[in-house]
Image 1 (cartoon, rainbow, N blue to C red):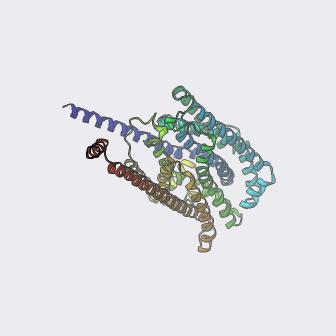
Image 2: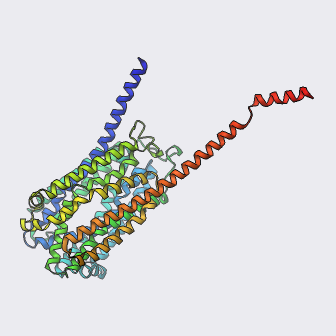
Length: 501
C-alpha cells in the first residue's frame, strides 16, 4: 500500500510539474501572439492620417526597421539573463553591458539622423524622394533612446523567465501594447496629427516601453533580488564573467542583427528595383503593412528556443529553480511539433481564406480595400515561414543549453547571402515589388535554418563521439579492476608460497 501511495503521489507531482512547465511556455507564446495583434496600433496611428498616409507608412517603416537593427542584438540579452545570471553580481555585469550598448546605439542614431552617412543610407541607397528621406531621418532621431529602454527590459525579462515568472513577463508585454493603443488613441485627437504625425506612433512606442521596463524591473526587485545570492557558487556553474556573457551573446546577436537588417536590405532592393518611383514608395508601404500582419501567426515560435535553457536538468544554473521539473527532451520535441502545426493552421486560415487578410488590414491597420488587395500575395508567402522558423528555434535552444552558440554564426552569413542572391535573381524571373521582398525573406529563412541544422548535427556527432570515448575509457578501467586479484586472494598466494619454502 505504501508503494502504491508513493507511486500515485509521484504521478501527481509529475502531472503538476508538466502542467506548470506547459503554462510557462504557453503564456510566453500567447503573449507574443497578442503583441503581434495589438502592435498594429502603431501602423493604425499613421494610416489614420489620411493625408500622405502611404508616404508616412514608408517613412516610419524605413526608420523602424533600421532602429530594429540596433535594438535586435540587445534583445538577445534575455538569453544571457536566462542562462548566466544566477546572482546579484551577475545581474550587475549584464546591466552594465546593456548600458554601454544602449549608448553606442544612441550615437549611431544621431549620426545617421544628422550626417551625410544617413542621407546616403536612406535617400541614396533606398532611392526615396527628399520628402520620405527627411521624414525617415527625423523618425530615426526620435527613436534614439528606444534601444536602451528595450535592452534593460529584455535583460530583466530573461532573469524572470529563468525563475518561471513567465506570467509576469507576459503581463508586462501586454501592458506595453495596451499603453501603445491607448496613447495612439489619445494622440490622434491632439495637435500632433497636423504638426508632426510621425510622433504619434513613436511616442506611443516609448510609453509602452516605459511601462514594460518599469513592470519588469519592479518584478525583479520584488520576487528575485532578495532570493538570489550575492555571488554564484561552484554548484551553480561558477561566477559568470563579462567575457563569458559576451562570448555566449555575440553569435546570437549576430544572427538577430542579420534578421533585423534583412528588412532594410529588402526595402533597399525593392525600392531600387522600381527605380525610386511612386511604385517604389507604394511597395515599401505594402511591406511595412504586411510585415507585422504576416509575422502574427508564426512570430511566437521563436520563443521555443527559450524552453531548453529554462528546463534542462543538466544545466547547473537551473538547480535552484528546476528541482521538481520532469520535462524531457521528448516532451519538448512533441510540444514544438504541436506549436508548428498550430502556426501553419493559423497562417493558412488567415491568409488563404478569401477576404480574411483584406479585412484584417482594413479593420486593424486602417488602409483602404484597394491597398489591402495588393498585400494578399505577400501575406500568402508568409504562410510557409513557420517550418524554417520552428527548426531554427528548436535547435538554437538546444545549442544554447550546451553554450555552443558559436557554431550558429555561419547561419547568419548564409542567410544574408541567400537573401541578396534572391533579391538579385528573382527580378529577372518577373518577380517585383513586395512579392520580391517577402519571397527573398523566405529563401533567407530556409538557408539559415539549413545551416543551423548542419551546425546542430556537427555538435551532436562530437558529443556522441566524446560520450563513446568516455564509455570506452570507463569500461577499460572496470576491466582492469576486474583482472586484478582481490587482496584476500593475494594474501593466500603469499602464504602458500611461504609454506612451500
